[in-house]
Image (cartoon, rainbow, N blue to C red; front, side):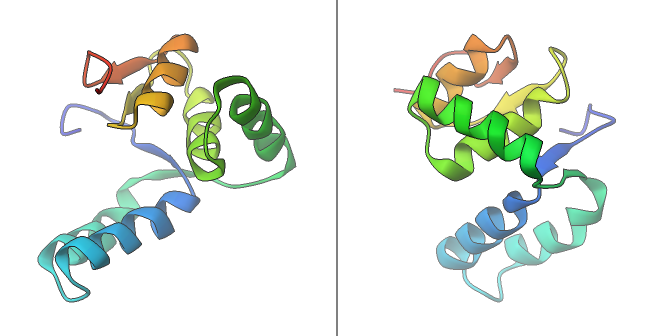
Length: 109
C-alpha cells in the first residue's frame, strides 16, 4: 500500500476493519489505533443507491456476502488499475472476474 497514491474503500470498511482489529488485537491495541489514525488517508466510497444496486448484482452473480459485495462494488469504481487485497476466496474470485488486480496473486485456499 505504501506504493499507492490512492486507497479506495467503501464506508463499511471502517466498521468491518475496526471491529476485526478490536476483537483480534484488543480495543486498546496499537493496531486499532493505527487504523483509526490512518483512516483519513483513504478515499471513501459512500454507500448510496447505485452502489447497493451494483453490490446486489455482484452478490447474486458471485455468491458474495453483503458487506463483501459492497466493498467490491466500491473497488470496481476505481477501474482495472484497482488492486483488491483479500484472503476471502469468493471475493478474490469475483474481483479477478471483474478484471481487478488481486493480492495475493493466487486465489486463497
